[in-house]
Image 1 (cartoon, rainbow, N blue to C red):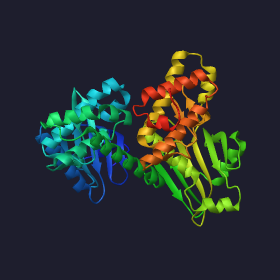
Image 2: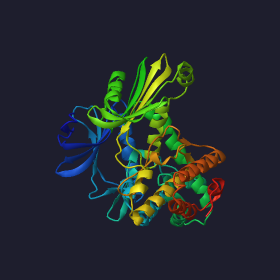
Image 3: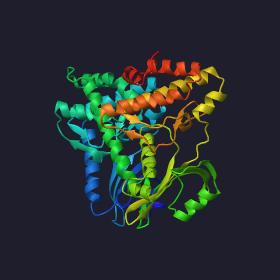
Image 4: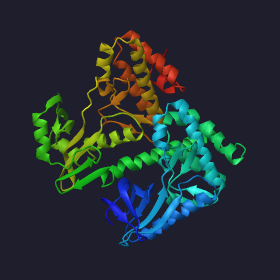
Length: 471
């Protein structure tokens, strides 16, 4: 088996023109390929349990097909000629859009019909006694005005109770943006119940609460565990003297302390300080921003040694924002010095973001339409954080950048938290609002525009009253 060029099969046909779509090292490869003159997708299973996983995938597709649900046809099943892999070859549905990519690209008015289609497909699976155990938008294709179910391995036969079915619907709703969850949960619930022929039996608020809890747990698993160990997104290296995480998509590779210090020394200092130093520089031929968290004295060193570093907090929160679809400079690398397991000086490396901060933007921009758009974007960002129980902790205007499209890029993330307790989140959010508005207290017109936008966008004015603002 030569995954670099072709895979010869036991019937002497071959998969050629291989393009890897998904890779789980030593376990599974998914290829876009050519086979017998056809464009196909091939799943190649490796390891001691290859045949078990191939059989599960084929069985799931058979169940979907028997239920009359659209799924790519299984064209061939067997082994590679060298017997090292079990292979499934599926028809390629082209042209087609991955439901997740399509959803992210659509404006809200067009996204709702797509989500209704996905909910109807989920209802059809449940009505047929099938359950998608790995429920993600990426496991659906949209083509020829139909939704196609993918990933036969995740399909199981099960007759769900009503509560279990609603929980699955909540899991699907958890995969969409929080603003869309709040706007459409009632419609999506009604769509599901109509497809099942059910009378309304669940409050939309309950479904929404389940969806938000599921999403928060999913994000927390990702930002507290996955990105601090080797995975498809991160290269992790730990020794007696250091620990570092490197983004696999960022273009950097594992570094060392001297290289980081040289880059700090030759760069442009953006922010000097005893607690942290921020430098714009080059590392491995990339323009990056390095934020070094300093140890001021030995007592400070002792207090920091047993806690997660602030660099780790920035690394975690940058990935948190990206997971929720919010803008922040690409996190590239996190490096901690270690002394027998205790933490010392730490470094957070991110991509350079060239955009002006919000203070500079409003001082320089005279386009009233663009100014209003940025006001709305700032308040909408805050509203999303309110719904997600996220607080930034330092809402200076210099920590909010504005792109040329009027979108908000958030930096300086080491104080950010996602709270579990509603009251703690509410008070922290009110503090964020107060700090944001303080940036423009001297600009009455802009201050009033922000306050007005807060009262228009927030349906619940409790945090606004707690922040001490009124219209």
